[in-house]
Image (tube, rainbow, N blue to C red; front, side):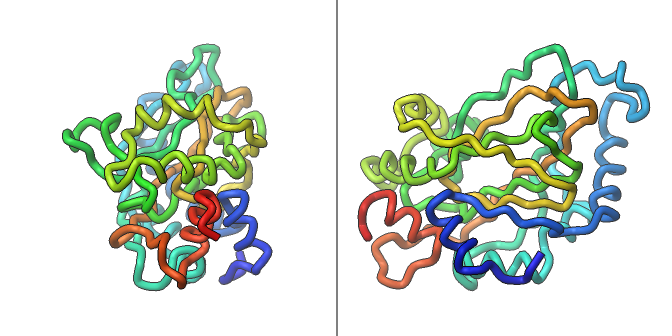
Length: 259
């Protein structure tokens, strides 16, 4: 990847809600990460008949290949471009891993959603976590491919431009925003958006606006899909009433017609 985004890429992020970065880390680094993940899976890498579940979730990974893959100088430069210097917190783990397998069973987690960013009354209940118009706590959603992902390998579905619709919804909800489930219940009312599949070689990273609507889908290919989806955390919240604002803030301002 280039160590900086072009103006065209920044505009694509603002208006479409994401930017794709190829070759962000090496195949060797991806393979080292896969070795760790396969060791933790309750199935046999060389025996597809043992892949009986459509999705298996693994825990928070902070091993060296994971940390190195998301903490490169090039990625830091892009974070600065999209969010602003000193406004984000480097990733110390890559979150949970929903490993997706080819399966005749349907996964039960394919609904459209927006990832929440701060706790509600019960911090242990993820469905009560919340998101507000200033995206308190979350700077970006990242989709990090550790295996090659084709259109058949359950690529994440990105709803292009949907972050603008979410900004409009959240603008009416104040600082408390909406819970994960409250927001999910409103997504079917939104305008139809073009579907983009998050495909690519291992080492591809999609940096997504925190409000971007996305969804998982069933795996129709032959090899398991390994993708992490950690947040890039904000030190505070975004500024959407300031005159000097970053691309992630500018997208929200466009969505709520403040430009």
